[in-house]
Image (cartoon, rainbow, N blue to C red; front, side, top):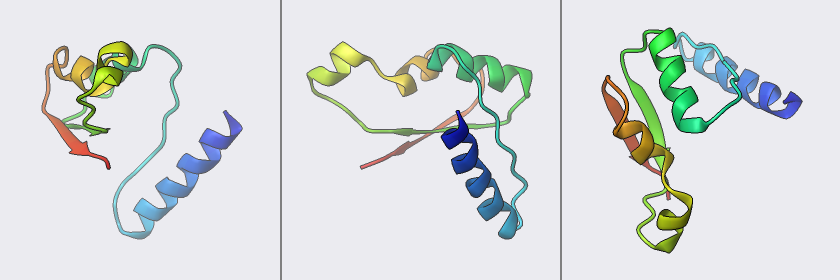
Length: 83
């Protein structure tokens, strides 16, 4: 938890230096369900998620957070393919 807080604090600082309003939030729970719950609670306009773009058996066994959110969320979702 301490490492996550430190990492996110640094990112928030970088965004603020660029004039972008930012804050960090750490939640514990199922990634898909928690992401959607927080988006609804915070009334977000857009969700942005990175996706590894898995197409092999790892996707079948591990699922996809991006796909899970995509099929359950009621607001725009921006998926960015991380390589």
